[in-house]
Length: 206
View: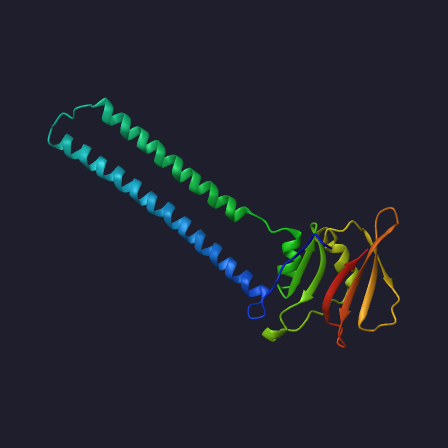
């Protein structure tokens, strides 16, 4: 347990609120990114319009425009730099939008709605604990715990494919054996529940 990594959750600020704040920050960054691309596009369009109007005016006055290779080369280089910048902005924006949540994200923020803190050691979840009581929330009642465990086995970081309930004398705890594909018990899942069957914590032992 010396290598255990504990994610702390201050009492005055729930994990779910911090997650919401992070989402808001990401949205703000996304808006700024879109705004920068839009601003750059407007600037380029204006530059093209100005140059087009200048060329038309020159033809209307029957003036012969002089061709300066140095100026032309600088303009072409500038256009290429702008195009590369716009392309990079678009690529990063698409990548951000295309990023998919992991199964663990779905477990913590989806199924468990951000109501549970997580203790992780060596990439494995050792414990989940209800943390939102102070916010007036209630712990979740997981009706089919065996299906829940199997669905999120990879998110827990544990190598099991089957689940078997274990008889317990303590009504406040429900225990399940975790079995791998060679029919070997690799650990146990302990659900701490209240009188209404709501899960206040889940811990794994080996």
